[in-house]
Amino acid sequence: MRLIIVSGRSGSGKSTALAVLEDNGYYCIDNLPAGLLPQLAENALINTELLQPLVAVSIDARNLPSHLSRFPELLEDARSKHIHCDVVYLDADEETLLKRFSETRRRHPLTNTQRSLAEAIRVESDLLGPIADLADLKIDTTNLNLYQLRDSIKLRLLNQPEPGTAFLVESFGFKRGMPVDADLVFDVRCLPNPYWKPELRDHSGLEQPVIDYLAAQPDVEEMFQDISSYLLKWLPRFAASNRAYVTIAIGCTGGHHRSVYITERLGQVLQQTLKNVQVRHRDL
Image (cartoon, rainbow, N blue to C red; front, top):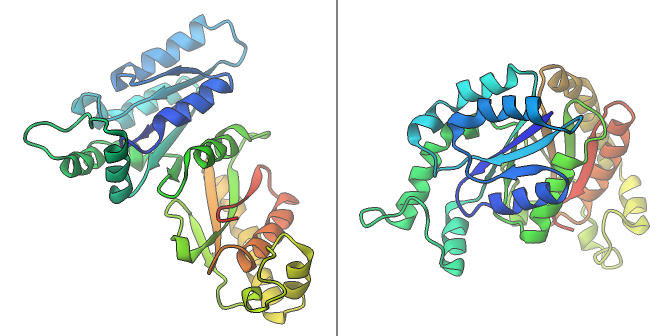
């Protein structure tokens, strides 16, 4: 059995995540009382007609605070039944959450006559702390639209042909912000930039003119060898420590040329040694 627990602050995209999972064969329950988590897991194991049941639940701040504070022991209870449990925590920065609520005119579940929306968002973060601390996968949805969030959920949760740690190598541009859900970040802005070559500016690191240019730069090759050596040495130790997800982020200024080229090469090298290696280009 596989159980995915989706949590996060209101407005971060939990409903979208559940919808994607439901569309892909998961039996989904929104706003499950956290205290029922072990019972749900046990009943699913006993009563399901499926050989490998797939269940996803959302646990959020609408729960009793006493249940949320007990989440670590409840999760341990569920896992003691030999159930594969993934805890996924979605979040976005406060400004983005405020904007989403103002645009949709939804009421935040923790607002009242004494508590403003901004205060409710901060209180919610404290209430969900025990879940966030135990999250196997954190996804920052600040810069993701609906379609990008759906793609991210599919890539990270559903695209795992082999058991074990799922590694994501992701390119990004610093000008759009560093991915806060990255475990390892490498800055390649010191490398020669194809952007300043007019004939290369409109190409990306996936296209041959940029590939040829960067492959001919000694600094690029040296940086690639250093990063790949580090990852080949240490990523297997992440896997040995039972990490479910590891994100490696490679950043350049715009996220179109240098980071894309390095990310593609790293993905190819890591896929020869590790299982479940995925490649994503955030800003292309």
